[in-house]
Structures are given as structure tokens and as C-alpha cells.
Image (cartoon, rainbow, N blue to C red; front, side, top):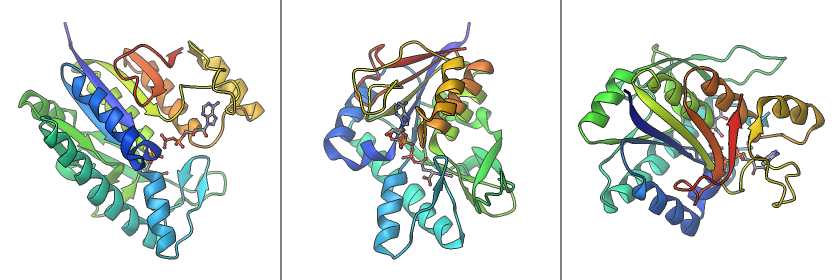
Length: 258
Ligand SMILES: Nc1ncnc2c1ncn2[C@@H]1O[C@H](COP(=O)(O)OP(=O)(O)O)[C@@H](O)[C@H]1O
Ligand SMILES: CC(=O)N[C@@H](CCC(=O)OP(=O)(O)O)C(=O)O
């Protein structure tokens, strides 16, 4: 029987707020057994970019990443955010190992081709995960903390949506572990009306996604979250939940169903 593994994702809005970040980390520390943390940091990159006079361009929840932007996100995700999260987890007694997808070739990706007329620039779609290496780190008692950066095998860093990283890692690790994936963010889960916190949909069926995307009830960052989650569920991940940042150890949120 496969051993359980939790893959947990934290988004930029929660990282940015010290109280929310602490509440998330308390839950993450309390989570028993092998675990991997995937972090975003989109809002932090946008804010630091603005201070440098750079404008963020997002298309369907993904950042258009030109030469200057790939340098910015490498510094923010691979440096600032990754190392701060790692140091905080160390202070809480977790043997965190901060990594980008280039380290240990955790995730190799290909530069996204022009899609529907959009050239995303230095954005990568994952093609290969070094699940074996991640497994060895976990077996050695480490907790990988992974930034949303990948590499193309030809020396370039590529920016990759953090929900995509979490889904891709969950899917690859499902060969060795019984994987549960939780994508945490500020809201309670997938909402029928994004402005009504009481409108949580649980369970959330795949057919709802198609309908709600078409009607516009699901938009922006929720699109890659759900695309990646359903892909993971179809490919052997045991469970996927989209939930609030302080609900890792509960069953609240939207449990996805295919
Ligand atoms: N139906 C929906 N239910 C919940 N959130 C939604 C929905 N449609 C769009 N969203 C948006 O998706 C956002 C979450 O995606 P994102 O900004 O990428 O989060 P994070 O970076 O925190 O992971 C929410 O803040 C919300 O504005
Ligand atoms: C290609 C792409 O869109 N990459 C994302 C990676 C960070 C991310 O996904 O962060 P959150 O989870 O906090 O949104 C970006 O640069 O915004």
C-alpha cells in the first residue's frame, strides 16, 4: 500500500498578510506525515514590479513574462519568498528545503507556444518531474518548499503558475504515494458568486467548471486552479480540495469530483 503524501499550495495573497501566513503555517506544521509545500507570490511580484516601474500583464490568470519580468520573478519567487518561507518553517521545527524547479531538475518545462494569439514569453508548461529525487528528500526527513519557477534544460528559467506546479507535483508523486492535494487561498473555496461568501459549492463537479467558466462565474486565478486540479484527479491523485488557508486540517472547502 502506498504511503500518504500531502501536497499543499499557498497563494500570494496569504503570504503577503503576516497573520494569514502565520495561520497557514501553523496548520501546515500540524499536518502529520510526508508533505510538500508549493508557494505562489504573484501579488508580491506585481507590487515589487510596480515599484520598479513595471506593469503586470495577466491573461486568464497567467502572467505575460518578458525579459525583465523573468528576472523579477526569479528574484521574488526563488529568492525572497522561497527563502523566507523556508526560514519560517525552520523556526517552527520543520526541516524545510527551499527549491525552484531548476534545483535537482525538480520540474523541467517547455516554453509555452503562442496560444490563441497570446505570447506569454518566458512561461513554462511542465513536461518532466524528478519525483524520484523529491521522494529521496522526503525519505531523508526533508519537507520540500517549491517556488513557481521551472527550467527548460537549456539554461533558461521559466515562470510557471503555482497551481500548475502543485498539480504537476501531485500528479507525478502519485506514482509513489497516495496523494492529497489542497490549494489554499483567501476564500472558502469555489463560490457560485465570488462576491457572496455564503455561496460555497461543495462538492464541486467538473461539469460545473465548464458551465461556470463559460458564464463568467469562474474567472482569473480560479481558472488555472481548477484546470490543474481536474487534470490531477484524472491522473491518479486521490483527492483535491480548494479551501481557505486556515483549513488544511479540516474537510472544509470545495472537494472536487470528476
Ligand atoms: N467562482 C469563484 N470562486 C472563488 N474565487 C473565484 C471564482 N472565480 C474567480 N475567482 C477568483 O480567483 C481568485 C483566486 O485565484 P488567485 O488570485 O490565483 O489566488 P491565489 O494567488 O491566492 O492562489 C480569487 O481571489 C477570486 O477573485
Ligand atoms: C505564469 C504565471 O502566471 N506565474 C505566476 C507564478 C506565481 C503564482 O502563481 O502565484 P500565486 O499563486 O500567488 O498567484 C505569476 O507570475 O503570477
